[in-house]
Every structure is written in structure tokens, then in C-alpha cells.
Image 1 (cartoon, rainbow over the protein chains, first blue to last red):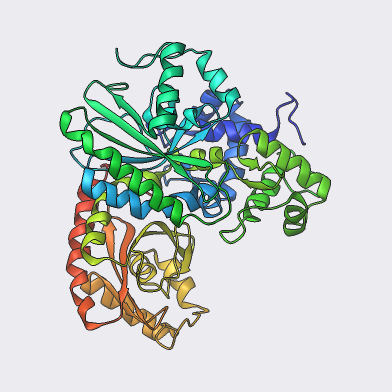
Image 2 (tube, helix red, strand yellow):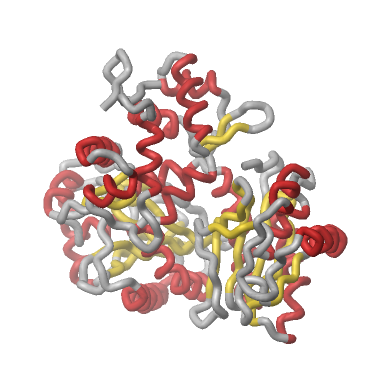
Length: 253
Length: 253
């Protein structure tokens, strides 16, 4: 691998440049990119120029830099997550039409949940997640479902903590987490009233592929009130529909 | 920029590796990646290993390679297309609930339309496009809308051809294309019966940002029958809704 004098590879620097962009600040000056990545301005300029040449970044008329459409295209067109998301989308729309608020599709990436898709109603209950947003596994209903059915080494890592509290209802002890995961495996769903926000209830069910492996969590975020009790059945039916629509080969990440 | 002995940069080779994956073949052996990119097997292996280390590619248990979730995340979380897509999604869902079939959001990238989002009904009329799919500007209703309102140099390039025929109805002459674009600017929509497939009608309207610049095309693909005449008004109303929901800063690509 070709390396710069500091020993860091070009690819690694390019990744750091992409990481400098955030949902809150999707447009940056090159000087700001240099500052955030710790790269010399000349190095950042050169890399931004090359990435722009490939369409992975793009420049405004005023020379500010954004993520390019080509980056998005390369990421999406052959992504296994695109297959999963395409299969899930019609069922997510059905759930959204009935339940309203937020309907989400999450997968595990490392020790976190990442949300591939979210349908939201304009006046939905509050929600921390967004598309391509992440949440820790112990805190979210989707994370708990993926954790309950995930590999033992993942469970050991998460149980070892830290288990950050979002509200007084967040699971923050290994004992409570362990018994919750056992309940989820038995019941087939995760039920998280006020775990991330007092006013919100998260409910998640596993989505299986044709071989029975858990590939995603389908979830809703609804008001934390008694009227929300009916959502579990709707979610379970939708998850079965997604499984039927998935291609026969397993989707792994 | 660090370069390999052949003079091609590492980033350029990495882009070629991503390009080796297609919607039809999203999972590849390293040897197949080497073949498709023209890279030496050792070079391809080394680059795949580094890209996997960054999470931009991922390996199955059987060592086959896919696009990684991290690539998807970096592309999406700060993408200007994500802002546009998030603003458009509730209105696209409304159009889809009323019209059925396919509802699409397309933007211009280079001399083509790329589709950021598509909602499809299970039994929808046939459709060539997919998310992150591309179509030439002269053939699709979305492309014609973006072309009609695009820069003069783009129009000159597309008018210079070639104008590939998909059906007997596709626009294939510069004269017909020029007059169609003038009609679109006057009427406010593109109406393409059977231009890509005999049975399908494509209808597209422009989506403006707060400053009045055209940032996208909102379109439906419906059966090419008399009953489809009502869709234009629905699309125009939805496009206005999207404009209202967009942040005040202009979205450029």
C-alpha cells in the first residue's frame, strides 16, 4: 500500500476526509476539512481535488465541499443493505400507514445498530434516530433484538459495558440486560417504554432471511401510551412479509 | 498523491474496485475483482484488505467480498441527496398512496438522471429504473425535465447525440427533443407515453428549492392508458410541498 511519509495510507486519509462531514455540517471549506482531519492544508487540498475528480466529493460554486452523488451511487447500487431495504420498504409503508409516527429498519454494524431506513410522519413522537444514524445496542429496541439473537462474543462485549443511560428507564445493569434479552428470545419482540426518551415507546421484532438467520430489526417509535399496545402484531406480520420477499441467499453484513 | 508504479493513484484503484460490484453481482471473489479491474491479484488483495479494514468492503464467512455498511453510512449521512430525499419522502408516499405503481425522485449527475428514491407497488407497471439506477436524459420524463431547465452546455451535449431509441416512441432526433424541451418549460411537466417501454407512461415535474432553482424531478411511471391523465396535478402539488419542506440553502450536486 502506498503510504505518505507519516505512515498513514492514502485510503485511510480519504476515509478521514469523509468522516469530517456530518449530518449537521454537510458542507465544508477545505480549511475546515484540514482542521477536522488533522491533515496539512496542502495534503487535504490535494486529496479533496482527487476525490472531486472521481465524483466522490463535489464543490459548490463558492468552492465549498460536499459528499458527491457518485459516492452515494457506489455505496448503494451493489449494497446488500439495498436488497434488504427494497424488500422491506412495501411492508414498512404498510406499517407506517397503520401505526404512523416512525417505522425503522435497523441492522447491526459492529457493536451498534445502524438504521437503513426510516419512515416518519410529520407530527410523530420525538425520535433520536435518522437514516444512517446509529444507536448503542442496549438502549434501543432494535439493538436489543439484534443483541438477543447476535453472537455470544457481541453479548459479552455489550454486557461488559458501559451501558449509557438516556432516561431513568434505560437498561444500565448487566443483570437487567441479560434477563431482557432472554425475554426477547422467548416473546419474539423488544418492548422499550421510555428507554431513550420518556415520551416514546420503541417496539422491535427480528427480521429473518429464508434460512432463519436474523438479518435486521423492524421497529416503531410511538407515543408511550396504552393505545400503542397493538403494534407488536402488526410488526410481526410485516417482518414475516419481508422474509418472504427476500432473495433466497443469506444477507450478511 | 501517492502512486503505484503504473502511475495510477490508490484512490483511483479503490474506485475501480467499487465499480466492479453491480446490482446483479453484489458479491465477488477477490480473483473476480482483479479480473474486472485489471489489477494484479496481489494488488487487488491488498486493496480489498485495506478497504475491509475501514469497513468500506466486507467479507462473508466464505471470503467473498461485498460493499460494506460503513461505505453506505459515509455516503449517506452527510449527503445533500439525503436532505432532498428526506424532504421529498412524505410527499412521495402521498403520491404513491393515490397513484400506485412507481413514484421516483431523480437528480442530474453529469449527463444522466440518477434516481435517489423509488416507491413501487408490488404489481406495478414495468419499470427500468431502480434506486441508484441511471437513465439518459433524452429518454426519461425525469431527464427531460432536468434537461429543459438545465444549463445550455448540457443541452448542447445531449442534442449532439447519440439519442438511443428504447421504443418507437423514444425521442431520437434533435428537432423533436428541442421542441419537447420548449413544451416542458411552457407546460411545467414532461409527458412520455411509451418512451422507454410501450406499456408505461412516464410523467415528471420539476422540484424547486427555495430560490427557485430546479434541484430534482419528481415522476411517476404508470400504465400508458387514458386513466393515467390525472397524475400531473398530483405531481405538481407534491413538488410544491417538497419545495416548502426543503431547507432554505440551495441544494446543488
